[in-house]
Image 1 (cartoon, one colour):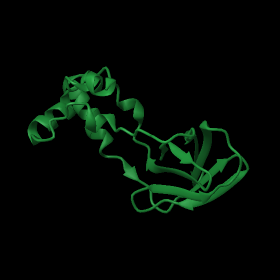
Image 2: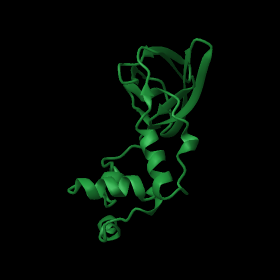
Image 3: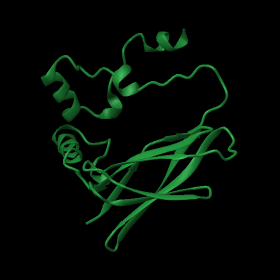
Image 4: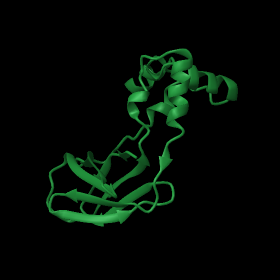
Length: 165
């Protein structure tokens, strides 16, 4: 068995540090390649949906002089929300997460953000907001997901105008 550790970008402020991710039995990311087309692309997408989350796995976070552990939930998800009040410059910082099952271990490095001082922040999930996904048509959505290359998805016509306002 191989392990996969999927880390998401975390954040830190004057009060707490938040880091989260998933632990899976390996789904072999090399099986998904953006240059595949047609049925080969469909098989690699279907393979991604067959990943197996690993529950109750001990996960360790290391950041600066902090070292803490937690366990994964039933869906392989873990989350660290820990008090943090150390001096830290604004910007991106690396953290390290590791886990081990029997003799198999994995270590991954992720990023967390300490926001710059300001009054406005913009958060956008581009995949759901600006890419055409055909969410109102089940069969067209399935067709695009399984048979179209993710790098060739189209954006809505007015996206550039939207961002330039």
